[in-house]
Length: 389
Image (cartoon, rainbow, N blue to C red; front, side):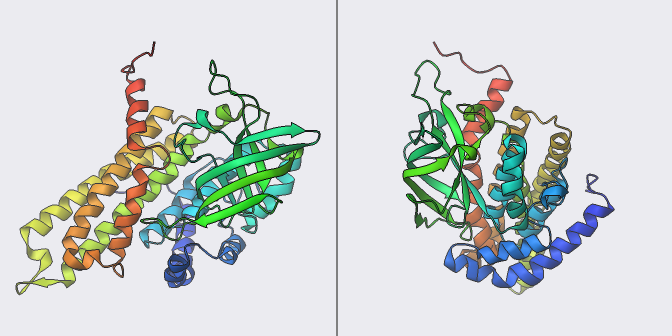
């Protein structure tokens, strides 16, 4: 179906992104996969084209698309269509930059945004800790104020972009834990990753998204200047909910675009592969499976486009963002599995892109809030939540 959320300017931007992905990213992607991360210099090259700070205002060196997510979506789509995930960039651009824009003071914006927009200062956000998972109220990393510095101690895990990051938004406990108000006492510190006592541990080996460096981080008496506190002290839990809609949209955009990539690969394979003396595409089962996949994709795309419009209009509710994330990632899982099945044994061989898409798809139902968490949010919106005694 024809999409209506993009203009001619969007189309020109898409053409530029597609050309960059084909000529610059795709040839290097196997190397990035083997080494478990994208070269930092590659992000700087993207920055020269204005691709690493699309929502940053022009006065800080960015693309100036401050009121729209559409350009971010196009870049994410074009990388996914080529089966070339850039999850680290999505975290940097779609998650971290909005926090700096919304909660940073003018001095912080002038200090950080130019490098972030240029791709020369890569960032990550560190919330998850060993043993806490989605329960941010259980965070144990502490930051004690001593004079003009916070002293940071603790550990984080599953931090996307943590190996490449120059600055990390670390969520830490700045006030004692209060069992009567579990959400209180957390703050966000924008920590220089080159600080003494800041250690980057293993680049975790994952089932999929191999190019997305995923780190264990530890902090031992790391001194963080008070000037690097983002927003107000003890307000982190309130802050962390502000950008959840865009975070879930970036996951959904990747999910839907990856779904299309899987269908395109399976369709191409069905045209080229002969089985029992006839092209695979001639078999009724192949036709029916691909027809089902195409229909699910179109439904997911329409739902997503409406949500992007609502996000730009600042009308996308947490429950609707959860609905979109739940539906699009579940569609991605079902469709990618069917498309791999069409490939038969070749679908299980990693040199075929469908295998990469299959492995990458598994995490989208986990990060950014699991499917079960999405269902809980939706049920609560429907008035189905049970009040705890």
